[in-house]
Image (tube, rainbow, N blue to C red):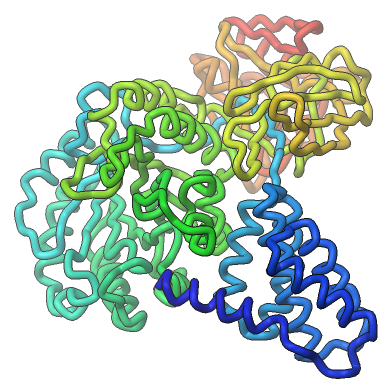
Length: 628
């Protein structure tokens, strides 16, 4: 595969300097001679200068196949020149312009490489804020026989491997028992050891699949994810898509018919083999419950560090080395399927030792492990689980085992205690919200600058320096209460030493801080924020407050009435009413109960005091303090 692409690039390069038809502008020929001389001399600056002049001249006349060839070939060479100069942002812009011409010309290999380069060379500095809100935690865990599990008491999932046809289910049953006791999810990786050659066997093996499902159903209180035939987009024995889809649909049908607790996972490798399109193997929305991805972070493509300049694109296309950003590695899968299915990192790992080179890459691995566990849940809320491949496989190019690297194991255990894995924090992209509360709060940045793995990030408010960070996730605590409400600029500058790499400015709106509610000292988390009315009354989601006070809640949709019962006290509140009933007696409310989405908001003081609680207002911190 690699050899054929190198030949393609070489032939294409030689073929892009012939004579062209006479309708080209007269100036073209002089610039073309200078361009050809620059190419021969390896003068990157001149290649860029004269290459772009030729592009502009070709654009100035009606578009033809010939002008497309001129523009496409020159943009490709200009992009390479920018790369050799280390000016990757300019190279990315050049390849972005190149793609539509290459598509029209049918240069599919060139398009594939260019898209990969645009993904990597385009700089990113996206700011995130975080809110304490209830959300499903991101599940995490490791391979069932991994060393890390012995010291990971808080794991929330277990990854079990089974090769299709293996009838030894004792280990799986032991893991199901552990999952039941610890309320964990089990991912079963039902692999096809002979890849495409096993598909016919699968279609003739309903009995085997049913025996597996029968065991799983014995543990119907355990959530099970069945990942069948994973990584088909990189199989050496390439599968016919129709054969693969038929087998997957059969497995899905049996799962639905014979289990009550199992979901099917269609799982791909993060990047496909050269001529494979992962979409061709997608069984259809009705047959897939989760989309999985194998996400491995590797310093060297195929464990080699001696690729020539002409072969360097492999590192970029196959997401290794400088292109091994865990967030970028998921871009294709998330963009294709993230809007229609929840996504899991069905297996993942960060290489800390390259066996082919005898090179220890621990420091590199620590940085990328941190990026994976901070950034993936932050940037991609679609990701619901991260399973780590804590196994050492003989004769493998890379070593991922946490048990063989104390530093990485220690970092892993620390990272899996982050709020994303506890389920009480929601990250919000400032690109989408543009809203910041008027209070001290933490902000974070997902930063991607090709070839600069750990720069420094400076934050500016209205052009004035506010904070700085040099470590992932580039967090900074900024006191936004110092700034008046309204529109401000929040700038992020990415630098390395005194060299500015990239900057971005957000127009933000600083708004009053969201009201917090504490019951007996415990902060309540709402999926709908409390509201301050124009008459300075606080409305809060009724269910959360009442349940925190020990009351039972009932909702009558027909009359839009909420009933709360606590001991001998019964309270009824109807949407839109200015009164509530306490044990049948009317009490006038100082604000009207309202619906916000599907949540009932009620005046916090009146309803809490009706249940015998004491309510106080902390104006300095915008907090309601309730005690019973």
